Every structure is written in structure tokens, then in C-alpha cells.
Image (tube, rainbow, N blue to C red; front, side):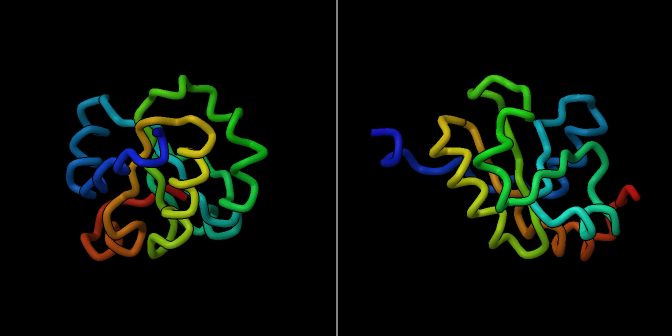
Length: 112
């Protein structure tokens, strides 16, 4: 039954920024490689490369019903990460709409 549930809708970058500024940000997960993360990431994002996610999901340290937003560069790895987390029992996983490319196109801030 769990796999038949529709995935949570993508989160808009502006909505994420508003929630961060209001102190209500979801768990933010950057699933790019560590060198990509070091090059610039969204503030507050945890970095677990998608290839390591299945074995390292426990380091998220959040209940499985917590809201988690995942992103990569274009959204392909984020979609894979969303499926991995869902398969692991996380019930509220969303992809950042447009992923990092969309964030950059809006000239939103990056941390280094």
C-alpha cells in the first residue's frame, strides 16, 4: 500500500526560503557529491550523496514522518533519493522544485 501513495508535491524555492527565514524549515538534504556540496549549497542542508543514502539514512536523525526536502543539481538524483527514502519508510519526502539549478536561476543565496 505504501508504494501506491503519491509522492509529496515538489517544494517551490521561494516557499523553502520563506520557511527558512521563519525558522520552520524542513530537513534539507543535498544528495550531490561532497565536492559539489563544498562548491556551494543551500544553507542548513545536510550532505549525503545519493549513492550512500540507503546506508547512511540513519544519520538524518529525524523521525520517519518528518518533512524532508531533497535536491541535487537538476533533480534526477533528488528523485532517486526521494524514492530511496520512501522505500526506507520516510513518509513526507519532497523534491526541491528545479533543484539547485532553479535556486541559482532565482539568484537565491548559497552557503560555502
